[in-house]
Length: 199
Image (cartoon, rainbow, N blue to C red; front, side, top):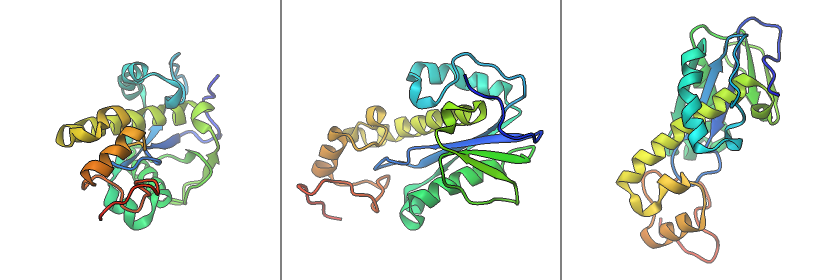
């Protein structure tokens, strides 16, 4: 059973990211403020939901949320500042664009950096404990999937419509065969040791 809120503050937002372990594409974060009476039976950590369920509940979350925003951080920034910092930056940017600005932030995971002097709490597996983090996880995942489906049209040989940029065997074989694209994260270990890659 997902909990409504962590703090006693009136305006609490949840934030989460998607795509941290991918070899290609952005890391995407979302931040969501939900009303206190929000109830959605199917809502859960996005990893526990089917793609069909995520797509079904996204418009419901957006229609009923007090505020939401999502942000993509592109591979060149990930390569520059590293994936942890890029993930936190994506969450911070999402929070900054909320209206109203939250009075308290709950973050999925165990790492975050202060933003705008707003108090926050990191919660490990928060996306399976709190409604606003679960909602943020659904938005981050679905908007990132949309992005990967779009760039799949440009580079269909990597099958991003299926693997979404994660390091599947098929994705790595395509990298070995075709090389890398502007969407690949060159700071990541794109191939296992048995392959060589000309950068």
